[in-house]
Image 1 (cartoon, one colour):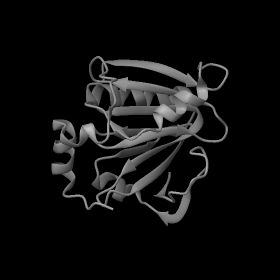
Image 2: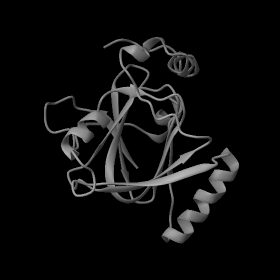
Image 3: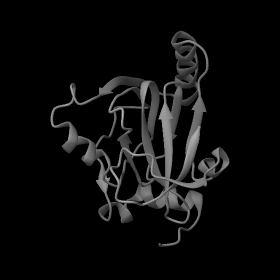
Image 4: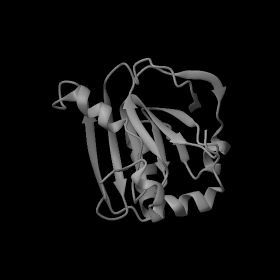
Length: 179
């Protein structure tokens, strides 16, 4: 797993933006972000996914492939994914192929960039500010898991600042400092 503070430069969002300041799995866990590396063949990884679905009561799933050839208005869409927002349910992604970046806000309101690649599973809690982009390969295939029917409506900042799921997330992780 590779996570680090985002460098905030003006380079393309798909570039690494590595500030050189690493972020550990323990630091991610402190903001309720879970990371798992699933080892072995895809069949072996899917057995772990199935077990997790039972343990965490994930009842629904789908698969999405994002690339310029498959997503109409690709450049516009990935810029939309990169808008800071929350969801009112967990965002669970198992990366089957390709790579991308999830950025999440830490306790100090800094962006933490998490590289996700084949075999990675990321669980982003409800109410956390986050955004997503592909890397420069412009390709990812991911499985999305849901406890119920997904609540896909993103709630962008600043509208989400008063959202109950965001406020509950902040209460769980402790106060943030404004940058």
